[in-house]
Every structure is written in C-alpha cells, then in structure tokens.
Image 1 (tube, rainbow, N blue to C red):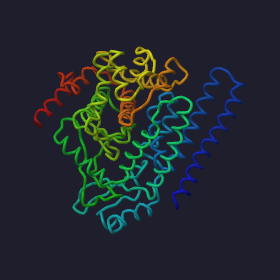
Image 2 (image 1 turned 90 degrees about the vertical axis):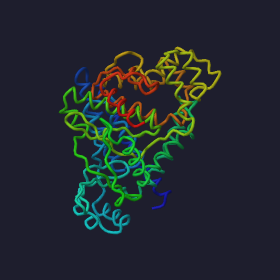
Image 3 (image 1 turned 60 degrees about the horizontal axis):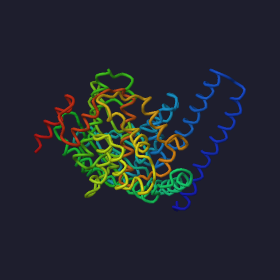
Image 4 (image 1 turned 90 degrees about the horizontal axis):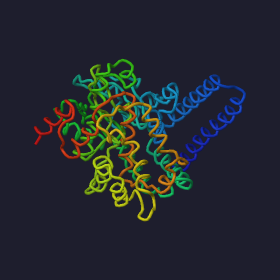
Length: 453
C-alpha cells in the first residue's frame, strides 16, 4: 500500500472516530437536558465509558503513534471515570493482536525459518500487544524461557502517517492557544524518537546498555537480550514472571506499593541524572511486579539521550524551581533555554505558579502522590482560559524537554495510582547534588553506585 493511500485511510479513520463521537456527544447533551441530579451524573458516566471503549477499540486496531497517544491518555487522565480509564487501559498491554500467520511471516523473514523451527516451543497467542509490536512466549533451543516481540507489518508507515497528522494537530492548537510553540522542533523530536522504536536492533542495544549499567543493582531488574534471535523486527529477551500493573494495584499491600513506586521513581532519576539516557515511555505496560513490590523494567525502544550540554541547559530551570524556589531565577533560566522569549512581559510569580504545578511534590519536605493530585495538576496545565492563560499563550516547549515532560507526567500518574508518600524533595537532591540518602532505598542505591566507581 502506498504511503499516500495509507495516510488517506488512517486520516479517514481518525475523522470517522471524531465525527462518530461528536455526534454521540451532541445526542448526549440533548438527552441530559431532560434529567437532573444523580440520573444526569450516571448518564454522563455512561457516555464517557462508551466513548472510551470506542476510542480504545479504534486506536487499538490502528496501532502506531495514535495508539501510543491512547496509551498515554489511559493512565494520566484521572478526570475520567474508573470504568472509562479501564476501557482505555486495554491499550497498555491487551490491544487487538495481529493474525498468527502475520506474526509467523515476520519471524520467518527476519530469522530465516518459522517460529516453530526457530524455537523449541512457540505460543501462537500473544501475551501482550502494544503500539509497535506484540509479545509471544517461547522457549529457546537450549531451554530458556523467553519473550519474543514481533513488529507489526507496515507499522513504520503508520507511524509516519500519524506523525504527519500530529504536526497538523500542533498547528491547530498553536493557532488558538500555544502561539509560542515550536511545532516543527517538537514533531521532529517525536518523529526521531519513534523512528528509533522501529529498529529492534537499537532497542536491543539500549536494553543491553541499561542491563549492564544496572547489573547487581539492589532494586532495578532488566531482562537479558538473546542476541542470536534478535533482529530489526524481532526482539527476544529473557522471560520474567510477574504481575501486570492492574493486578499489582488490585492485590499489593501499601508497603509493596511504596517499594514499587519509589523503585520506579529512582530508576528514572538515576537514568536522567547519572546515565544521561532514559526510557521515554513510562506507561504501566512496561513494568512487571512481584507481590513484594520488586519491579522489572521492560521496553527500551524509546530512549532519549542527552547530547553534550543538553541537560546542562535544562537543569538550571529545575534548580531554580525546586532547589531555590525562586520565581525570578526560574523565569531567567526559562528565557535562557527557550521556554520563554525575552520581553514576554509575564509576572515571574504567575509563571512560577503555572510551571511548578506538576513539581509540587518537590517543593515540600513530604508529599503523597494521589490520583486527585494528577487530575488537578493536569486540569491546571491544560486550562487555556484559566488564570494562567497568558502564560500558556506565550510558553514554548524546547524539543529537548518533550520526552522528559512525558516522563514527568507518566511517572506522576503511576505514583498517584500507587498512592505513595515520601520525602521526594530530599530524594531529588540525592541525584542533583549527591545529597544524603532520604530513605533506605536511597541508601542502598548510593552504596551500589559507590561500589561501581
């Protein structure tokens, strides 16, 4: 299928989805005029759930970047009812799979034989299906249990099409609110990172690098890569048993949730500040959990690496906001790196109030992440007609910050669902300035780091 035809078809599906749910919304608004109170709330909830199910079904079948967008919505949009979030959460690990014959054809093309001959045992039904590929359980010829990720045929063209559409969306948003947005820079950064995800050889190299870096770590577990059965479109790694995020949430003790939440948070901070390369896709489908809260980290396809001087440019904004808590210093740092253009005329305190919204956990000695915090923070950030409207209108997002911002929101959403409390400010200072460990896990991490020198 030509790129032009694919683009036309996927664009048409998006517009049909939009039109279908737009019509449903109009009908819903007309019907709700005739009801009051609890009946109206129940009707609103049913409408949201049906819409979420429709979006999950359509994006799950489309795969690519649009499905990844749906995955992001599924766990950061806390304003949605629980059932609606549950409908969208199917995009995290249970999207509609490709036909067994299609998966087998990819393996045959990449490894020179069908999976039943390459592996001692091959499970035809995938155990997980996501935006770029799906995962099958298998056993290698020497008896090792492995997970085999097989890329969807044609997903590369689908992603390019979606990103072309994304650029149009950015332009539309910029025309109304985000007038300072560097549309081209943002889309180019997203396109580059998502192109990386299409090359499983690069993902295998990323995973080997992270596994080597964190070898022997007290609470970071990364599966080994089986190089002999990994290619551009097939990635084979050690199979690690464990619970999904939903299973863990439903059964874990508060202590296990605390351990898991802090482990995920510390893994990200270590990667950003010390390794200078971090996983830019922190949705719940990329973790496995033990009953005690031990975490295995999966999927290293979308990895952002700081180039020379790139983090040095961004770090002063974080320090001004979190360490010094100084609005004037923050605004000067934001102007320096390109978040704001000089001469914008905005009050420093107003800028600080808006920009620090998702960083509230680091402005106090202790903080409990909750779903309400994530919901309210997101509502503030996207409220283009609210008290911070003039900040939103003038704010730009440098391309360097795109993937990190996604990680900030993604990890906050996970911690909010886990409902964990900790001295996050002190913990962050451990990674910014090698501060004293604020928790037992911090002490374990510090001892491990010092042993690596």
